[in-house]
Structure formats: C-alpha cells, structure tokens
Image 1 (cartoon, rainbow, N blue to C red):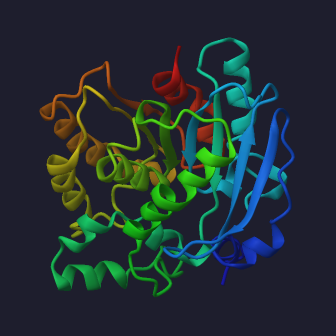
Image 2: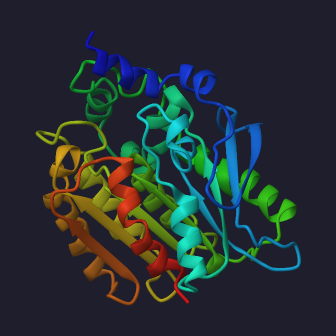
Length: 309
C-alpha cells in the first residue's frame, strides 16, 4: 500500500479519533466540545461548538450545522493538515457586519461510518437490488473500501441531528430555534447530506450550503445510477423556494472534475422547481480542487448568501 493510500485510510478510520482528538486552537471565538455525544441513531462522536468572541446568553444566534467537524477549525489537528478555518472566515465577515450573528456546530464524522452516514438513503433505496449491491461493493481508486460494510444510515444520521443534537444545542445555547435561523453545510459527501437534510426536514432547515457536492456517490461515473437517483429524488422532494435557500458549487480539478455535467442536471431541476437567483446559487470555480483549502477560500460566498444582512 502506498503512503498516500495509508494516509487516506487513516483519515477515515477510528484511529483519527485517537490521534487528532485534541481541542482545536482557534484564532477567534471559543470551542466548546461535546465529547463523544451519545445517540441512539448513530455512533457516538465529538461535536465542536464554536462561539464568537462576543457571545452573550442574552443575545440570540443563528445556528450553522456543519459536517466533518474535525476538519473545520485547526489544520494542526487534521489528517491532511488542511482546515476550513471557519472561525477566521465567520469572524471576519461578522466584524464587517456582512452576516448575522451565528454559532457553528461542527459534527465530527464517524470514521468508518462516514460514507454510510452521509449517503442519502431514500435515493439509494430507490435503486434496484442489483444496483444497490454494486454500489455497496464499490471501492476507491486506491482499493480502499467505501462503506466499510456499514449499511446506508443517513436517515438515522439526520434523526440524530434533528431529534437529539438540535434540541440539546437549543437548550444549552442562546439560539434562534426556527427554520429561518437554522442552516446546514458540508462538502463532498457532506454536500450530499446537506441537500438531503433540507429536503427531508424543510421545517427545520431554512438553508443549505453544498460545496463540491459528490453527485457520483461513489468514485466512478460510468454505468453509475446514483446521480440520476439523486436527481429523481430532488424532483419530488425539494423544499419550497419561497422559504428556503440552497447553494451549490464545484471546482474543475481532481475529484471535482467529475461534477460539472452532473451539477448541470441538478441545476435543471432547480430551475424547473421554481428556484431563482433569490434563493439558489450554483457557482463554478475553475482550477479549484477537492480540498479544505479550496473550500476555505470560498466559504464566504455561501455564508453571505444564507446569512447575509
């Protein structure tokens, strides 16, 4: 196995939790860790709650839920030494009075369960048995497994967020609890589950940011029924554009090079369902790759779109 393949396996295995479980160091604000947050729906995982410097319990804050929480704040604690630096981006925009007050809830992925937690379940279950078996047995280009024999579990992952985590956050912190103040965001598979969340729980989430959305679901496009299953699902389940905002984007390098033709099909659905520039953005970033460094550079765009004053 190459060193690169080993690093990839390390990134998505439980070893990640042991090696990189130290509290992130942030340039601004404060991280409160909910350690090994217990759930009856998914495996226990850390949740890192970022509070701005001026956080005060007498103020009310919007809430942005983000997936892959271990990759959000501090590059020194991540497997690839990259991070979104969410604290920097949010603090800068807040100081410039561009966005509304918010806290960020970074939900760690479950290591081996990441793909099964984030893969939209209803589209997967709409496939034939043979198609599901083929997708479930797929591998990464380096030979590493995708699902680690874990069944697709995203319906339970969303129940964990909506029924367990969100009530806890709303009780512990001073939040605006309604849909218009609750957002969800992620990249790659995190983009998929963010799309799925706003479709499955339109009364809970008012906006979703889906960066480098991994429409193939696996790591091949040839004879892959997954993208069409996602498109069919969205035709039937997209939320009301009058009350919801959705952001999509993609680069054109590395893994993102797979996305442009697939995003085009999604964009056609968005238009047909009545989404306009007021409530939907799809952006292309030529030359940008599939990485936290790339997502960091453009995080301000979906934040402004969803939370702009």
